[in-house]
Length: 106
Image (cartoon, rainbow, N blue to C red; front, side, top):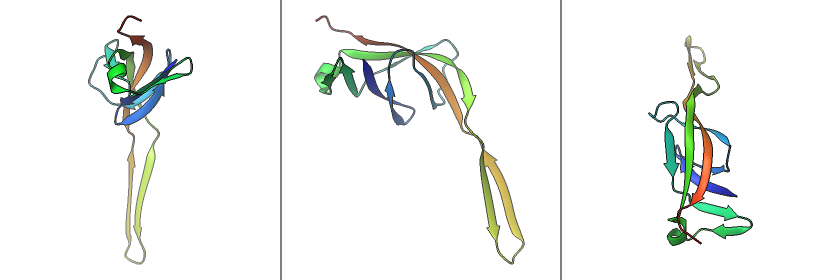
């Protein structure tokens, strides 16, 4: 079973025990996040109807904060002596998916 969720401005394919890096959220380590899925695939059955998806939820536990890879930015203009060098590291929150659950009784 897996689900597609919107987390951190992107859509992510998640299943139980997956570890993701999402855009930084302000929750503390050990906190629980809950997402409503956009799509659920359960044993080959695809559920995408919004009325049926209301019964599903995806929960995740915050593991901590991480940083992405270093990105180097270099600006240069020929014959003017202008050179500028900068860097950037995006901050992420690392989460582990703990469950994909149906809230309705079947």
